[in-house]
Amino acid sequence: MPATGRHALRLSGYAPALPTPFDGAGELDLPALERLCHRQIDEGACALVVCGTTGEAPTLSRAEHDSVVRAAVRAAHGRIPVIAGAGSNSTSQAIELSRDAEAARADAVLSVVPYYNKPTQAGMIAHFRAVAESTGLPIIVHDVPARTVCGLADDTIARLAELPQFIGLKDATGDVARPLRLRSLVGSEFRLLSADDATALAFFAQGGDGCISVTSNVVPGLCRALYLAWMRGQIAQAQQLAMAVARVTAALQRDSDPAPVKYALSTMDLVSPRVRLPLVELSSASRAEIDAVLARVSEKHPGYLIEKLARRDRTAGQPIIQSRPQRKFEVVS
Image (cartoon, rainbow, N blue to C red; front, side, top):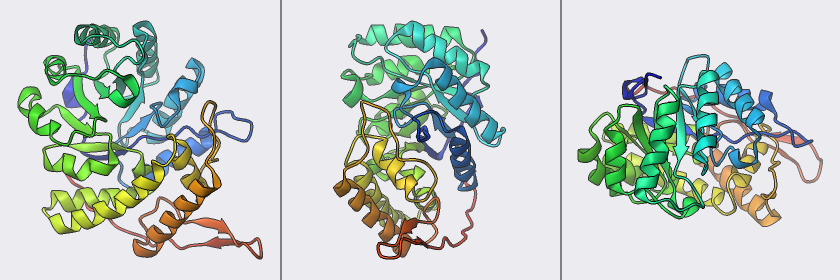
């Protein structure tokens, strides 16, 4: 099967790692997912990433996984790329998910380092090459040693980057010096994408191309403004915005992803806060912390939330709607 090649996706900027919405019965809420996709496209997302960790992929059946990818492709309608999570610690299952993503007309797959098995670097290369041989889609490899125990060595990434089907790295190591080390090994077209919102600006400063972000689900305008400021050389402005993004990120990291981001989006009436076991919904203390952070963003950076806050008045029980001013963004080419 011919590979599409790395020219298919030259990602830069922020791409949300979207949560998978569930309804009151715990089933997929595809209309809510499509609404999220439309909102993110309107906010200038460079791609939509579905069925990853934030999308609760381990709890999705193969049929549900396929439905989520198809819903995102339908919503995107070719306006921006859809990157489908298709990772597994079973190579055969990763191949099945990658083929499903291609059949669903996704633009690329995100393939994680096999978790729990603890493969060697040679085993990782063999795993990713087997996935590449099964699909024509471009592949972004996902290095997240905090979840997989073992991680990709720089030399392993360089070897994969020699194959044109491997177009990028989602780096969740928090190692902000990594882009500087990798760039000469992987070339200028290979996309180096942070997966750590807290250190994204530092990652950009060392040569990173963008961020696959949890925080941008909630404050896409803030994240995009940060990236635009950096690209324009407005360093002080970028640093200021990074501090605001960091406060939101800290609140969203108080509990297991995606429970915090789902709760945050539920305060805007976008999705239910429901998650699937073994995850559980947030404690009252965590909810209060997120409420406070979102209220501060709404006050200090009006219009940068993905949607206006809608909360209940404690005395009258009536919704209080906070306005969301319109903003205009410039496109970074």
